[in-house]
View 1 (cartoon, rainbow, N blue to C red):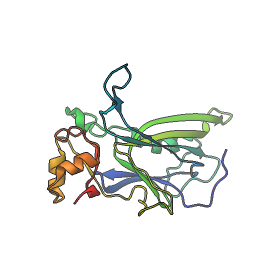
View 2 (cartoon, helix red, strand yellow; view 1 turned 90 degrees about the vertical axis):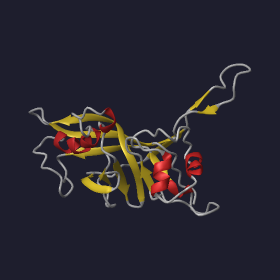
View 3 (cartoon, rainbow, N blue to C red; view 1 turned 60 degrees about the horizontal axis):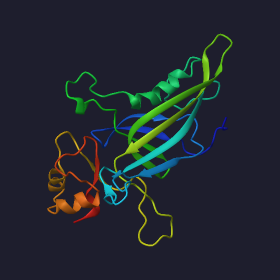
View 4 (tube, rainbow, N blue to C red; view 1 turned 30 degrees about the vertical axis):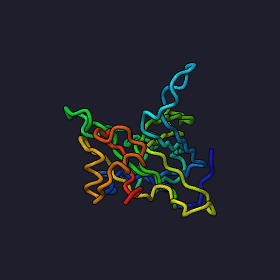
Length: 226
């Protein structure tokens, strides 16, 4: 198991309305590593003399990490008292998997909370896509004492930070201003609200094939054009 680190503790922060900080969970141990995955959705190109590959969906960036929790060691300030059961700590992480407006008749509003992972200068905003918990230590009376939690976060765009010294001005991960699409929003509406008239350029820069029908929660980079 990783030893406690002296680095600033990483945090999971709920983003109410996509921007206002809400529930904040400080991890007990910083992750040993972060894994980022970038993907595009294509169709065609798999048959002889068939059509060329066509971009058909939103680009996706995913962030994966493993977190450790152990009630036999000091817990973060502000964390609930585990009382000998590590699940009281991991339940705080599982909050980001819970659906908002679970009883709403509108399916588009029944979504997990938008959130941000922050560790020093590294930030990643999106939603928690999956969570796997493994308990590997129990007390003599059967209470879970230690657990590892693997979480996967995702966002519907490509987010890449060039290395320092790369040509051009490097972007800082997670700091590009983004607009979050609500139910019924279109690229035209989001662009107009930002004072941008060339919404077609925004759609093209974000790889959006249907600008009139955005998936709820889609993050749009409005700074790609003026």
